[in-house]
Image (cartoon, rainbow, N blue to C red; front, side, top):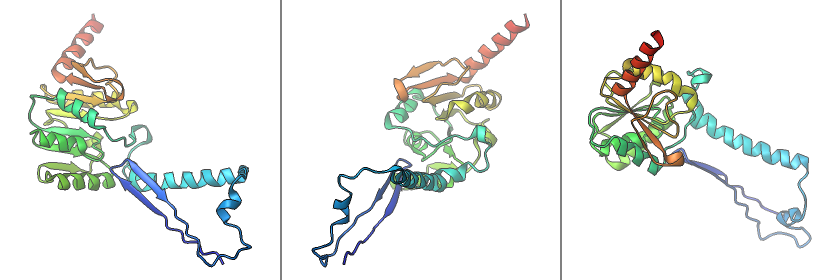
Length: 243
């Protein structure tokens, strides 16, 4: 008789790692006439049905992660404004902090994900350091990292739709969002941010604003925008259009 024990567990950590482990142990009471089921599969080609089963299982696992970790924050947001979670790398975080070097005041991360940029801002003296994130699972993860680092009293993570966040007191803004929402966000920031605010974006630049500084290469590149300079450029363009 064959005894098969299946042990499957799903792990999700820092929004990055997901694995599924399945272990099989065969009991020592196997009859000599019974072939190992694993060896039976060796040398055989998977048919169309087998491939569909594998694809379906993989898709189900991916959907489970999506539904549990990513989807809760999207349900209240229109489709065109939804932003997928993509954690910033250590180099990207460092580039953001470099572009904000020498500055102080409130630091806000719009769509803060697992909170790593906010946490690093608090380490570097920004106060208050606030992350706005709609996904409750990512908020819990953010607070866990902050607690583990001993900075949980110096950071704040709020479950808020970034389109409803008031930016009038935000001196420093970091944004790691998809290009589809950046154009709309330009209008919001231009209307609400204080005149001396600086905006830093990662992965993608703002579509119409001219950056004051650019740092890094490839996916680690970051762009810095000074709101005062952007507003002056917008006024100049508007005057030129009127003429």
